[in-house]
Length: 221
Image (cartoon, rainbow, N blue to C red):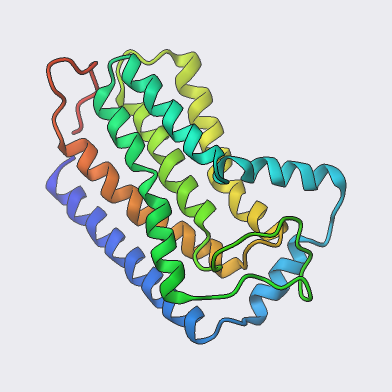
């Protein structure tokens, strides 16, 4: 990646960070927004058992202990196939849970109430940002990066992982709103913070050279 592209990417990340900070302050001061309620009711307008099951299935990898198991098994597979650096950084995607918890405590926004929206599954912790969205952007976004970087990765693994990861990243915001777990601004906040965390993780991954026992990766230009 040349210096011009690096500078441009850095400015984009700084703008995203500024947007996230501004949104965090805004929802802390004004936790009850009419746009959130309106969009939640729009998303929940069409409800049935099939959609309930689909939306819950989309959210399932982000719950505990499923998320821990998924991260651990994925890292183990990379390690067994000699992608040791990829394995280590895959484990680091779990730090997004700590980041989410810290921000939730600082903003301290309450979850949607069952008097306002339909709650399909009750959840704990505060509402902003969406931990699911944050985790999905970081973990599945990093999986997409690895599929593009790791040489020798079979196409029958690479493309399904990219497709599934993309699907989950872009459907998890709808899932969290539909299930009554989050407001629209919560998932936007999770997405923005996830992009920042993904950038930091990816930057360190691409910057850190592989050791002699590491399976080959594509060069970054």
